[in-house]
Length: 237
Image (cartoon, rainbow, N blue to C red; front, side, top):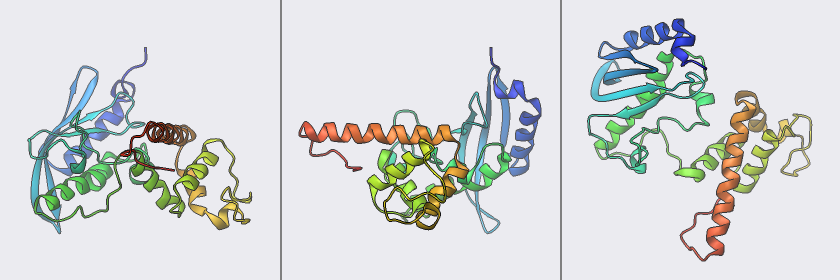
């Protein structure tokens, strides 16, 4: 039977513990059976000055670092709503799109990079919004539309269906920099949509296929909803 990550790699656990202690003295790593947690008070800083604090817990999944940490705000300050970047049914913080982790926190990078980067920006954003300001780091729509928007930025196109086609080219292995671009512009891929080449380099094939299949299912669901007369169905076509 496969063991949890911290049992397979005690050295990685000690490195995570060291990273947490180096970040602040108010977060503590604890092991409870098969699960590793970091719990405590998370400081939000700007310009060397502490602006705010949040009570949080971080659950390290069984296959960390292949899967992202699971973060919850446990002090009751943030409502469980999608607009607050929290999954309403679970209370899990949407710190990163799963797709974005390959840019913002690739597997096997030091955990301190996650604490100082995506996680700190997430709670800094929450503090900014609490003052009545807009989210400071840019926002994508929720659900499949947010995933589409993410890839549109990477690929350099506003065309939703072309975005899906380009993602499919990566997922199916139909991608070479010197091949004609799937957008049918007549140019080769590296001259037409170089962001597609960069995405293929950064993301493992299984992650691309997972995104692509998820988007295809969302398209089918949207088409079915419109066929049934649901005028509230969102389009990613």
